[in-house]
Length: 189
Ligand SMILES: [Zn+2]
Image (cartoon, rainbow, N blue to C red; front, side, top):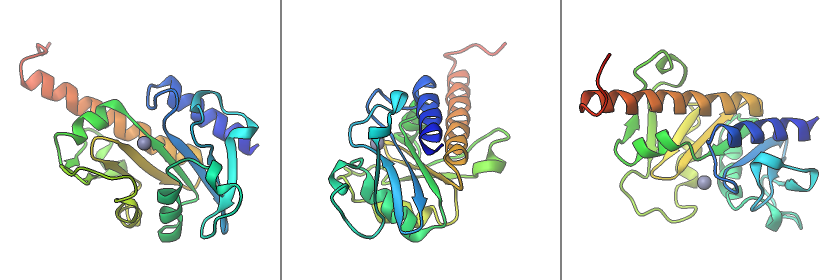
C-alpha cells in the first residue's frame, strides 16, 4: 500500500520530467518516524528496498541509507503538520528561480499556491544551509522553491504534495511562455 503510493508518485514525477533519473525524494511521516526514499534511488522505478524508515528526531542504523536530503525532511516534520513531502527539480520553476525572488502565478493557480518564495535567492548555497528556512516557510504555505535547485511541497498525502509540485510547475511554465511572448520570441496568435 505504502510502496504503491511511493511508486505512483515517483513514476509520475519521472514521467513528467520533474526529476532526473536519480534526483528528487519523497517521504511520509508516522508519528516520530518517517519513511523516505533511499539515497541515490531512481524515483521512476522504486522497489521495497528503496523505502527507508528512520527517526524524525533520532538516528538509527537505517539513517545513513536515507536520501541525502533527510535533514530538510526532518526539519519540515519538526516544524509543520505535514504528513508527506515531495522534493523535485521542475525545470520551468527552477529556471524562474534563477531570475525571480518569488514565483507569482498569473493564472488560476495563484488561488492554490499563492506567491511562492525563492529561498536563498542569489546565494551560493551549501547543502543544508536552508533546511530551517524551508521548514519555517512551509508553516503557512504548501510549496517553496530553492534558488537554482528545486521545490519542496507538503501535504497530508504524497499525492497532495505532488499536486502542489505540478501546480507550481504549470504556473511557472505559463509565466515562461508569457515572457517569451512579451519578448517577441513567440508571436502571439
Ligand atoms: Zn534536490
